[in-house]
Image 1 (cartoon, helix red, strand yellow):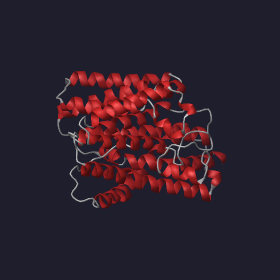
Image 2 (cartoon, rainbow, N blue to C red):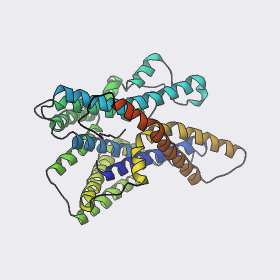
Image 3 (cartoon, one colour):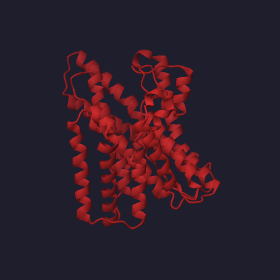
Image 4 (tube, helix red, strand yellow):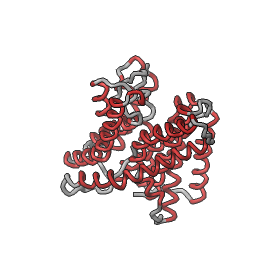
Length: 355
């Protein structure tokens, strides 16, 4: 596992938290604050990283035995679902106990079951979102894992067949009126291409593709400049063309960072690595910490305590990142170790993927 990739996972999680922290202030305190839409690009970075990690850790997947495929799916399941179910259960408990705190949630049996199984379904606002809102990205992740796993036992191999299938699905999602389709078909989206970007980078690096250090640095700065430039566009344009505006620069940035790590060699384990390891816990727990922080600040404002918006945003980010690290160290990591031990002698250790 590249340490730099773990750093990028931490960065991706922090970007999403930053975006949602600005929405927190906008919703609870200051409606005039502009949401940091660029932070939503953290999701696109997650998807690229996920494709890269899967293609890197599985090696040559052509003709894999069915036992290998089952093991792969088991490890993906225990990595994602138990923590997600726990977070969704907590959100459900809050909605049932304090419905006035749930601004965008509805509770029906079909909707809850769909949310738990990561099957897209519209909420009471008409948006195709699960009960735990960030779970929409996990629906894409699960779709990718299943497609990748089913491709592993074929002669073409997972990377080639997944590329064909996802490219076809992305075309369907681009040119067909999905608004008239059933909710689960919302997964047919150009966003699927971002997983392919990551896989192609992994495949290229396996063929000994390399860049000079100076070119890699230039590519990294170019990618950051492209991402930064999108902040001048409308949020609607960014979302509509996010695969190009955010996905492509994210892929270029990932490639640059990985090449730089290859050139430099070993990177020390740092706090940034810990943030990367805790990125999934952070991604889930910030759905609870930010609303709580927002209500605390709203209460302070109501009694005359005025704070700069930047202070409230940074506080929300800090609380969310710290909570994610604590949850990772004392819940997620022990739970993963215990659950992974249920599968005898796993052959692909240390496989991690983005949320």
